[in-house]
Image (cartoon, rainbow, N blue to C red; front, side, top):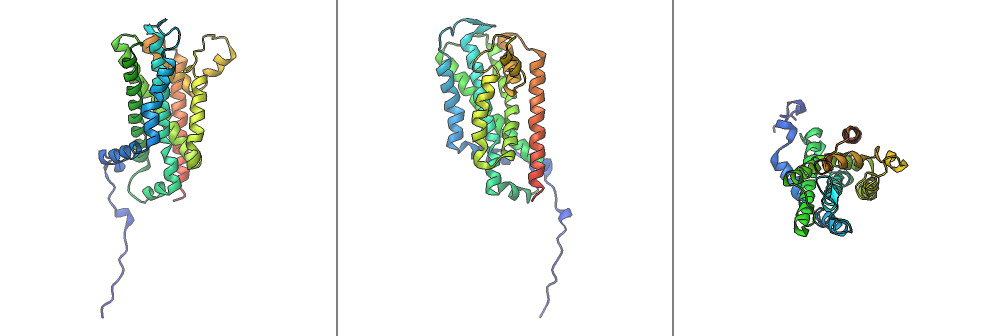
Length: 264
């Protein structure tokens, strides 16, 4: 009779994958998983375009607005709102993964937290780009928005880039609240930010109290940046606002993630 001597596994000798486990395969799987969610598809493909059709044909749509008309101004604003909502929703899926224990399961693999957050951000960016493309396609179909083609493309590209702010917000909220409450917080929260951030209703009186409050809200800076090619104006404080809120949400997400994974 022979006796088998148990061998000791050296965990430190386990090979770490390149780029912390980030790969196009993992990114593709994550993207397909998000696209299977019907609620996500509704927010991405239907809701933003529906908002544009509801507001883009109101009285005064053909009035001059910067280098285009009011319909173009509304189209860019609705594209930003749709992209922000979609990106935040994609980022907030981390809340459901935590509730199901998927996050802890991933911590048992060589996938690094940085690669995990990067994958989440890229998926949110892709979803935001789809929302922007759908709203701009709706604008072309309706035929009312008018502005030079170069400025049109610039507004769309800036809109996609600015969705990173809300992708980070979605991940932050996903780690901050229980899974079933993430979108209950983000949905009304983003709508309120849009009202205060000069997205739904332009705030023309720069001396009013509401204007001074709006300058400190997360949607204000990205809205000004996104519409800058159309309006021809980009205040410096709008850029500071956008960068500041991006830093707050990224640092907040990293902080909550470190707290969450420390319990594994």
